Length: 202
Length: 67
Image 1 (spheres, rainbow over the protein chains, first blue to last red):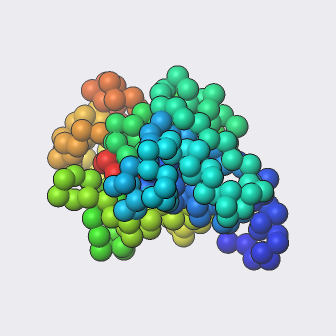
Image 2: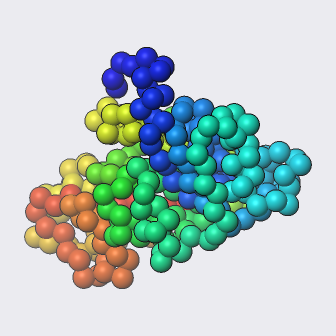
Image 3: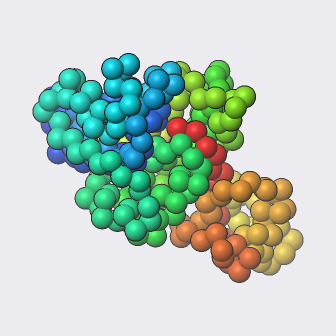
């Protein structure tokens, strides 16, 4: 980690663009941290709408229930910093769209819910955009066990989480542990943008 | 052969094994796995064909739902 003043790091982050694939528990909280940290451009992609149940862990408000997530998240981020350039896309990400959508990003954050969607984005990114950093998450359900949430890196692929706690009817995602994983993703993104690596000691 | 699996050294008596054989040895039966050999993605349909040899770096990531 380099030593930098607040103005220096914010100035460097202001010129960066981060793509966020999925605006649920991971994506909304990751975008919140990146917006506060001063990342200049965010691309938010999600096909879904806010539900009341989402409010147990996602960065939305009661008066946004029923509205599409990506533009709602853009509105919420603008209340923190209207200077961020935010592009909100209400679409389902398929393999054919990945390169066009995320080609201009310095880092892409995988923040989907379903494992099959995570695999699709990771495989497509590794094949089509192998030179773009990808920060993904796998395994964050439940509570406690903060220390089992790890960061693994090989090349430009970073995976945070415990790689085993799957969400299910008796193991729901809960705000604290989801937000830890989301902020581990955001923390890795900031380190990549400032230092060129996710900032973990080897 | 001596290889690395997720950056940990491992050795197998065989000179080469397919990704599928290594997953079976390690009792990994998870439905969604990302596999890379020396940094290159191995697509899921190729696990029976792609072999790993001495010195290769294998990465296996288990993907589970939640986000």
